[in-house]
Amino acid sequence: MRVKGALQTKKRHKKYLAMAKGYRAGRRTLYRSAREGVERALCFAYRDRKARKREMRSLWIVRISAAAKGLGTSYSRLIDALKKSNVEIDRKMLSELASSDPKAFASLVESTTVA
Image 1 (cartoon, one colour):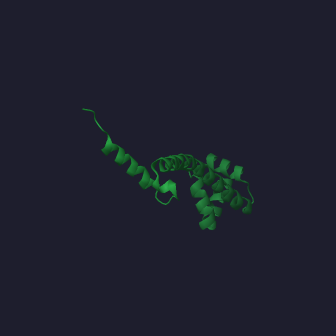
Image 2 (tube, rainbow, N blue to C red):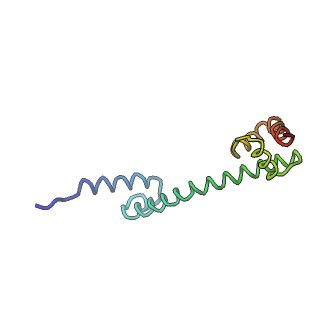
Image 3 (cartoon, helix red, strand yellow):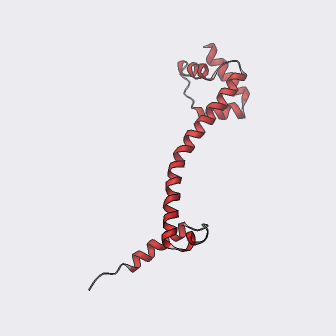
C-alpha cells in the first residue's frame, strides 16, 4: 500500500494561499500562482529589510550633517570630535537629538569641539 500525502499537501497549499491574501485574481486563489507570488514577495521582503537599514543610516547622516552645519561645523569633524572625546552615541540617537532637541545637540557639539 502506498502512502498518499494529501494531508501534508493540503496543509502546504493552505499556508501559501493564506499568505497570498490580498493578492488579485488567480494570485489569490490558484495554488501555483499564489506560491510564485508569495515566494517572490518573501524575496523582496528579505532584500528590502537590508536596504531599509542602509537608507535609514543615510537619512540619519543627512540630518546630523544639516544640524552640524547650522552650528558651524561639518559632519565629519563632528563625528571625529565625538570619537576623540570618547562619546559613544550612535548616528540614530544623534539624529533624533538633532531633530527633537536642538539645544541638547548644540551643547553636545560645543562640549566635544571645545574638549
